[in-house]
Amino acid sequence: MKSAIISSIGIASIKLNEWQEAWNEDGEKPKDQGSPLHDAFWTKLKLAAEQKVGKVEAERFFNSFQQIHNKLVNEELSLDAARSFLDSFSCSSTEE
Image (tube, rainbow, N blue to C red; front, side, top):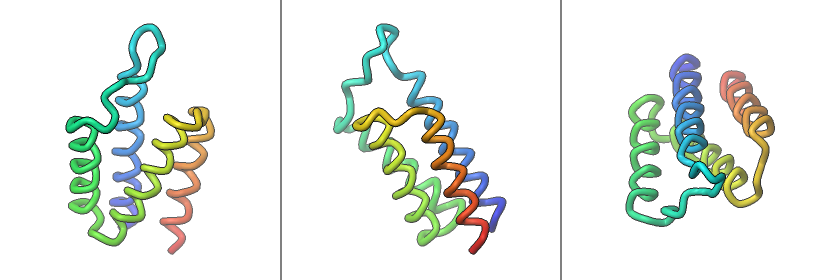
């Protein structure tokens, strides 16, 4: 179970990196949030997490990942703070 959670967190890190690379070259954030493409991303992420760790754990992961995303996008959370948040999630998940 721990390895599945850690694997899922790795997926989150990859998705976070993909998101960062999606910024326009002039530093602007992508403008397609709320679009079908954006909604498809969330659906795909949730389904992938459910397949890896089950529905209950996937829901926890998904909610945590959305919090990080919202803070990065809307509150301009630093990358270091996001990584710290991910690290704290992985520690709390492995302790249960």
